[in-house]
Length: 156
Image 1 (tube, rainbow, N blue to C red):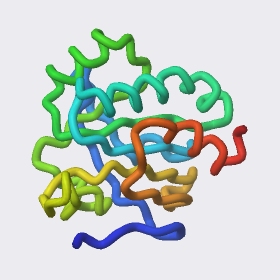
Image 2 (cartoon, rainbow, N blue to C red):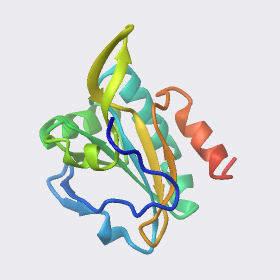
Image 3 (cartoon, one colour):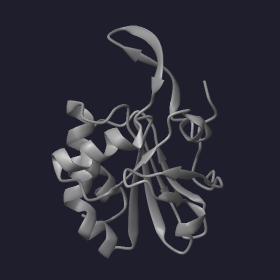
Image 4 (cartoon, helix red, strand yellow):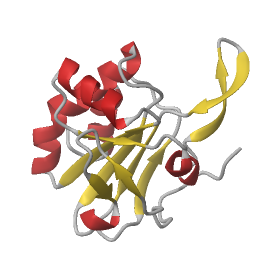
C-alpha cells in the first residue's frame, strides 16, 4: 500500500499538462488554497458526476479562496473532450505515468466487485496556501462528495 498523506504533511509538488496543453504546477498556486482530486477515468458515469459537481461549485469554492484541480491518468486530448462534452469549468490535469497519483497515495490496491485490483483510489486533498496538506480523504464516493467536502471545509 502506498504511503498515505495526512494533515500537516507537505503536499508533493507537481507540474502536469492540462486539457488545454498548459503546464500547471502546484508551486505556481502558492498563496492560494488548492483542492486536488484524483479520479479513475474521464467520461465514466461516477467521474462525470463528480467533475460536474465540482464545476457547479467552482464559483463558490473560488469565492472562498480555493482553486480546484482534477487529476487522472487520461491524456490531455481526452480531458479536452471531457471538458467540452460536460461543459466543465475546472482545471483537468493529465498524469499518464501515475507518478503524482503515487506521490499522493492515490494509486494502489482496492476492492472492485469483491476482488483486489491495482487502480486509482478516488481521493481528495485540500492544500493550504503554504503547500501543506490540510485535509486528505481517500476512497471517497463520487456522488455527494463535493457537498460533503464543502461541509468538511465549513462552507455549508
